[in-house]
Image (cartoon, rainbow, N blue to C red; front, side, top):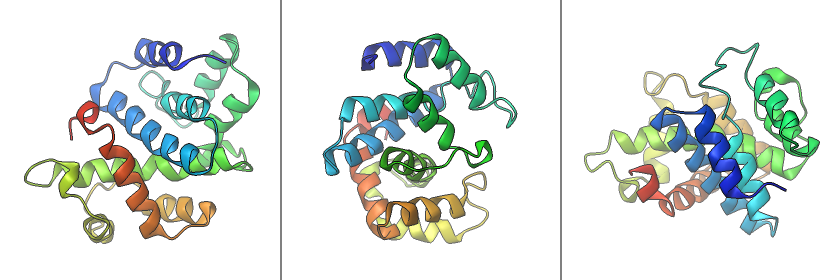
Length: 184
């Protein structure tokens, strides 16, 4: 298996945008939280999360992302389950989310971006001010962070089999563990 340093270097080779890098770190923190919760391999799960969107900046279209990333990962010798998990985070790939890691990655992707958006409109821009209640309130505001699919957020928690409120709280706590890296 490739270690985090290898994956981080690969991420930075393909991703220059600070916001996309921070998104990768946020999803990684959330996925690692669940790896720990479910007694799974934190390094492996974290690396999948770190690289889930690594190709997005170069290949942002639905036709290319995450398919181009999968090709690159195959060329670099990543195992097929790692690649299939990354493919499964995007509904348009048709790859079923038939493992716990696939469900966790999908569940953490949109919510971490949404929590970031909620944080950035707080006066202090600090995760310490973000609550489940404030996230749920912003989810009702269709004009707020329009690009984030509320349906995907809800579906992610459902696929994990946990209440949405609990999932939001878990992700807030996970992101707080890397708030310095996230600038939040």
